[in-house]
Image: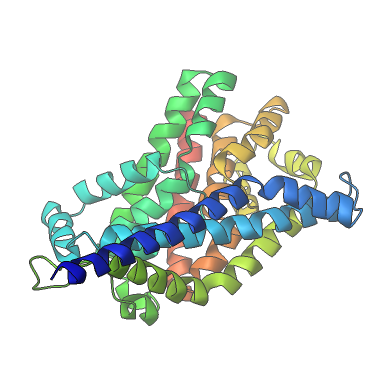
Length: 350
């Protein structure tokens, strides 16, 4: 009996050591991606920092491993947490609160998570697998990239508390309202089947308490990470490639020249222009500042920023692996219209 108890303990220690070593490698690699990308681009390949090709290639070399690391790490942690959670109870609790409250909770959670549009996808997949209603998961997916604490602080410092507060309340409101609309449309059939086939790694239905060792939990997390990353990695690379091209070859002056016009069509055009671009909310702030300096109205600029971070083309390409084209089109339409209405509202009020 004594030796039987020691064996699992040794297995757990060995597993913790391996996972800890891999986590350390993950952290070191992630924190040094930019210097590595700079060295490869500007030293090894000799590309100019001022050239379009150099800028695009550096963006690609940096963002590809960054998003793949985030994707793998987030799925692993989410699955590990799920092994402690009875997903049926979570689903029942969310459904009991119903739409509205559930959407508010998801949007508020999205507002405090520091993810860009592409790195929010793993959590979106996890919510769907856990049986959380699709409209509520969309509230998170929309709000998470829209709301960024760095962007909030920058807006507060550059434009004052009124603009920062408008940014905060409008982003959360768009997430809540869009999620409710999408939820009422009953679009579950447009989610790719494999998302539902990959079973959640939490406590299964009908089991009050599942006895798992740490080895079991880590094995489930590794398997889930392999399943999901194996199905979406190519779409991630394609999306980043498009974003890198636009990042390096689309001149900012052309963008400000189009959006700097105070016309009725400026808001919808700014939303359409923002979709192909790829950045997080903090990264788009310098363009926001330049546009405002050139005389663009605040509502137009905020609509552009929201479009960039919530409806980026790379995000749509990654989502295509888990959502069918019709659902992606509906998602873009609902969120796009919400952003356009918000832009017009701000232009009327301010």
